[in-house]
Image (cartoon, rainbow, N blue to C red):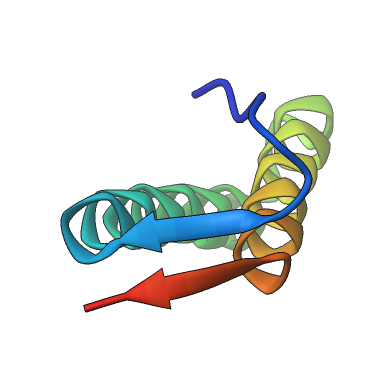
Length: 64
């Protein structure tokens, strides 16, 4: 998922739900990999993606 938009702005509720679902899917995959102690490089990529989503959400207002 590519998050390349303005630094600040407004995110609509439908987009927010999709983004949060994607974040949850990434976290589930990360947890599964950590339990199996596998693919540390992919774990790092997942962590970075989750961090980018969190940063994106922190910089945008949520519109109902």
